[in-house]
Length: 470
Image (cartoon, rainbow, N blue to C red; front, side, top):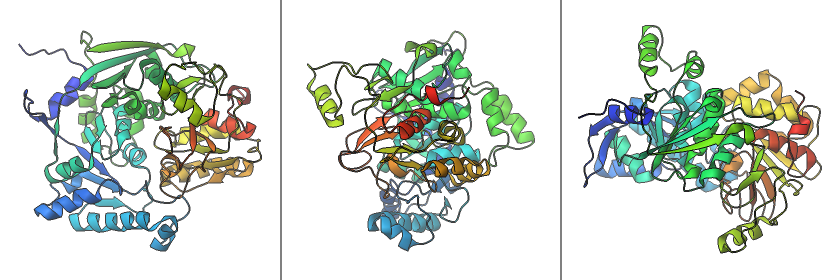
């Protein structure tokens, strides 16, 4: 007997199965949207050439350049070569590949260019119920719209380009129920860091997470994207939030969202994308949003996280734990607040949207970046940059002593000229704090835009709440 009571994940998965999985063979899953960038595609296109294959559905592929591109103004390949010949080569190859295979590329001259997981939603290409893949771990961002979205490897990028399908084993389901309300100075980044701290970096392994509950339903789409973005940091295959009126309102004016009668038809379909009342998840976790503080990481993975004024735990019996503290140059029993900061980075596919920049600007207004601190503010897309400048946010940052940059991944990954020096401590709104992630020997503290801004002002890891005016 077929079970008609389903989770959100089950509904989206079932609609996209071309061939069901067996004990021996994964399912063949149809892909609605394939987003690509310059770093994980060269080998995939080479595979197509070797096999004499075209891109099966170029109309379902959207390309941008974000990882290797500098966030200083770029007008030519000569500008790119300042960052490095490797970056320039990747970008040149991306332009050639897209032209040869008939794929739309949001290149240097496009006002729509930006970070891959920012522009999909911003353009309305990301929609409820879609399957979305990209050769990037943080593709889970798009799950905020009720899409099933996950990162794939370079070989799989080639498979999707050639077939518009993908071999996948069906994951299990994990409900994370978040009740209560986020307090003053506590945002979506603090929430997701708190969740990862609770379930651990392997807590979601083998699962697709559905974020549920009153606290999730109150979040804006920008905030939901922040939460879903970091699902992979808990080991999950993907993260999802059921689409609702907040989601539909967000999409209603986006250029690539359905229009007219098509919108009405889509909306009727999207409203059915909710977990049925009696559906059972394979696993459930309950979180109280009301108990969270501004959160910061203290170690070398996102699960090593504490409240801003809470002591770092003592786990001396764990050699890897001791190694992480030694690398970060912090001490168990002491809080992260007060540790000297060298660099502050506001940006990345986690926290570079307009509301993130607004939150940071609210803290920075009338303040100055502390002496000896370098602060980079990098919008997630050229459109966000334009919107922020229309609101005067760039002036708040520049007047405070921060650097206002062009759109791109920037200091999140340290492969485009924006890096943190050896031994320097960076408070970053990005998503990974592994050793050397932001530069060789760099030390990374993950935090919210508000906490990052407060830390820039104080010159030490700092609580943003004293800076909030309401």
